[in-house]
Length: 359
Length: 120
Length: 121
Image (cartoon, rainbow over all chains, first blue to last red; front, side, top):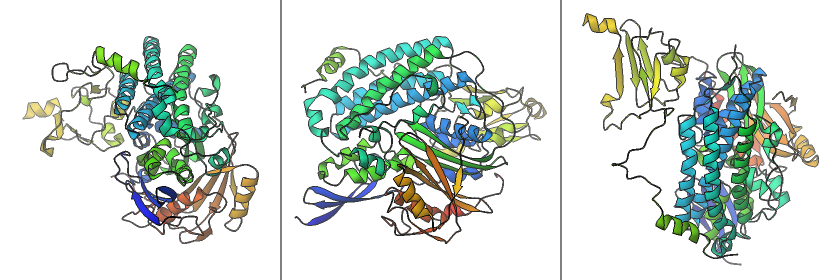
């Protein structure tokens, strides 16, 4: 047994542009324990709910995160609609699903790029982001924003996508699918990449459930849990199965995300073929009263919202439990036993979004 | 297991066109939907102040006695909410972004209604 | 959308046993959430099964109360408990990792325990 050393990892680290801090306990080169600390960018956005009325709050909640901004907005309005017990028009549900799935494609492409960057494959990183740019252009064309869409509202959506544009989106996605195939093949088949990811940071089936891992981290360990199966928005009418990999290592998690890109593209195609005509919003009258917990599937995993309203225009409490928050314990389970050099890679495989986590 | 899987993509980008545009020469085209900045049509404005009260960022200030409509361009988050709540539809989003500024003194754009200009 | 949600009341002495029961029934912890209204304060425990069923518990507390930690049953609970300790001033005993108030360092201590009721300026 070697001597124990404690090495601080982060909050500033070249591979992880977000302030996650880990105190790594090392025995020679091997990690034997880790203590996380966050709280470097805590903004207290949840507290703003007491000063902004529940319509305006949508725009604040969207700004919790720059990648899953749409799904944060969607989750917020779904929670409020849950309190109102409001049924939104079908077309609005399908539109929300399309934007949510596009978010997933762009988030996973972004993550694949960062993953490539983490093991020093810079050109692959740039190519992933080049493909992602096409998705951002779709966002700008349909919603008006590249990152923050501001398109959800309590009771529906603000903007409609006409059928011409929907067809165009599918055409663009065909190209994206083709180009991402070339890129994900590198992650799946390349010898050097596999050397770096296979067998690293194994999270077993039972561990993944016990520590409360979510999203691709959970599905990479063989647990078929996907909140979209709850059937919120239009997911109840679409045909899909959660993507599961058995190994639970870095490679499995990469593979889950790579395959989810194609699943999302397929879901958007289904949406475009099934989308009904009609209204895109309903009028909301009065103020919410009651409490509601809603769960959604973000690109990074399950997200939990809780809202409590007392019948005035301000909510009493709104809480976001973001996927990264749930994945930090999973990261702590993965770290013991790995090499110091693999820590950045492992931290990245849970797709950390610290700004999300601290709100 | 295979080697050099990225070779195909590399060859494509080696002989294909670059993915980026020559920026100062070729400028980025914005879409009609792009939310760039908020514009106001002062002829239609009734100074009700709904936009100012509903603005999540508190960037808009409306004064009825002075017939004045003011927006702080650096606070505005271009969320489009004011455009959607305006009862007279006098607000609109224009597709070009506010140009960057070096000092904050000219961050506020002020618009005056017609009668004030006639008086002055 | 119209998913029926119940918030089962639970007391501080029962919570660890309730958590153990949930574990035996195959549930896992997905969140702890503290909420404060002018009159009352609750902690909400949400559990979830792998078939996506969920169950909520509601535990009424006061600022300064000491609760037993459930991190011995569900390891992941320590993050939520530290968060509630720092933002609401509820103490927990025997947390798996105790940050002792350094999880979120806010300039105002227990920032979320103060309810802001006045109108937007």
